[in-house]
Length: 349
Image (cartoon, rainbow, N blue to C red; front, top):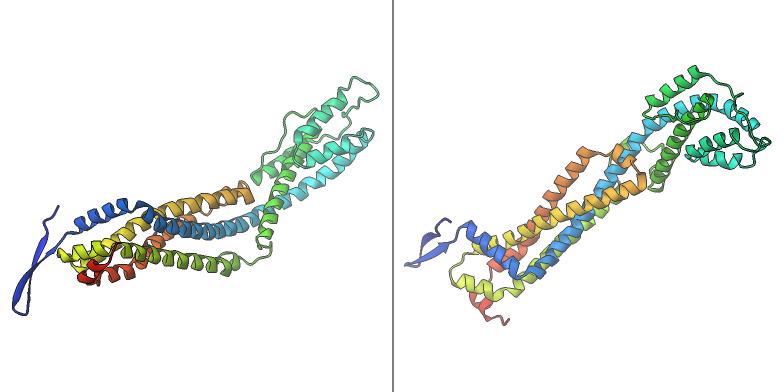
């Protein structure tokens, strides 16, 4: 530890000495003060945590929402185009399948489950109708049109948009077309659910890209309000800390502590609280944002996750929270530093 610096001052013909303590000593005293007033410090830390968590959540959710809206547009267009090609072959095939199975009352229910994404329901149904113990209910599917080349071409188009068709386990090769239709239909259903979630948040399919890439005025207003509340909370908590420590401040000043040293003490205390609270707030806001995005958009939240923008938000949140903690403590620190020692010592605890 560096030795205290002794400054010789001359005033009105007298020479006095003032001890300038090193920064390390101010850090030590600040940490001890935070330990003694732990629960009081938690008030300041909690206000920072809530404000920065809210900032990270609102800002990050806005960026994630925009990234999903922008990313899903070209992918949805590709899937819709492939779906139309698949339907050109599927619709006539489905009519022939319906003609064969029209006497089975459960066929319509099976098809509803199939179009909802349950491929196994149709697979099992086709096996049952071909192997039914009752000859009257047994139906042969051998007459279904089978064009392996068309099926292979459609399968390749489906793979070109990142989907893997279900081609195994069907009772007939002709039914592999149903495996292609199923995966395309499931993807269309998923994309429709995402677009519906975006519309509920006010993002329409025709919303301009420039509007999506900017933060909405509502989000900006919420962020500003949260930061103002955070700054006021820090200032109020530090003023309370100063009021509780009048005698302590007066004692330090009577022992020779300079105004600058008192300012350092309070700024360091606020900085330590701000860094810890900001880190926890950023982490909490990021976790809540990720969970909310996963709940709203499913795996699309990770498929289109704007990693660079989120990192920028996290770093900005850390800087903003730490800066607010310092700015919010400036006035209380100056008030403590300018306090007359005699007046401070007169305050009753």
